[in-house]
Image (cartoon, rainbow, N blue to C red):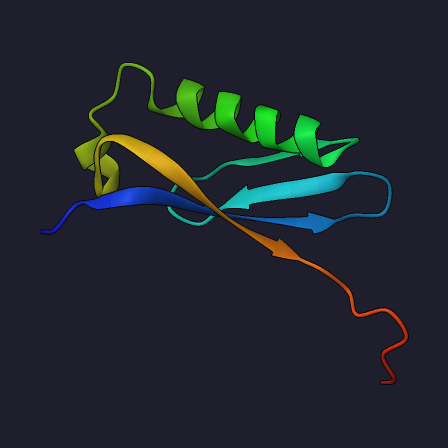
Length: 78
């Protein structure tokens, strides 16, 4: 099995906070600002992988985070 070097995550705007969710590992976190959300995501991933072998999650050693931001189009017609 080829190990991935990136943990994929998305950030979207929730009702009151930004919400970050990982695709490879079961992590969801939030923050009032984008910076806070990214920092919370980084910490949550580190804690989730702490003491574990990243290969158990299909990840290479010292993976990085690949973020996707979901943005609404301003003025878009539905």
